Length: 135
Image (cartoon, rainbow, N blue to C red; front, side, top):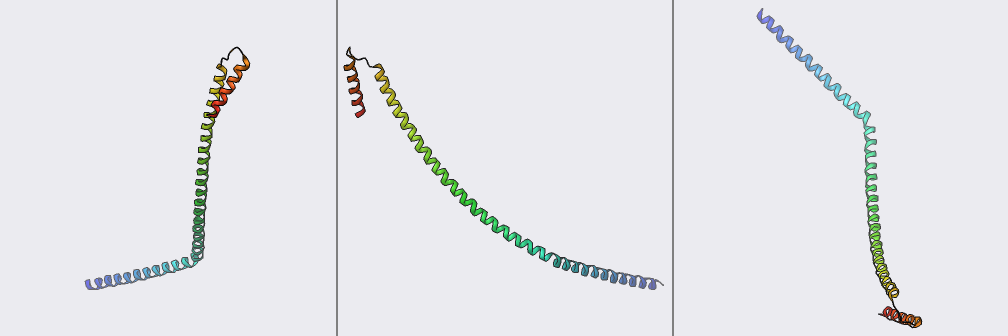
């Protein structure tokens, strides 16, 4: 009787293992078929996405090239602006120097005290001013 129960338990365990193995096999087969079906269904979408990615990568490359060109143009404009600023500052300094010279002449003329003859005093002032201009 003990052997009979033990044999039955072993038989049941073997049957259970066979059933579990069969169910596992069916599950794995179904899963692989599902993966295959998913792959068939998603293959066109993935292909389209790959094409879109390649197009986007090409666009990014073109944009980087355009940005590089714009940066070069900006650097050129900056260099031109720096040169114009330098020349303008030189012109301002020269104008200030000339203005200082003219102020000095005006001050000298304003302070000039000529003799009693106004015409002679004017002539002396003109001669001295012209001689300074020639220096």
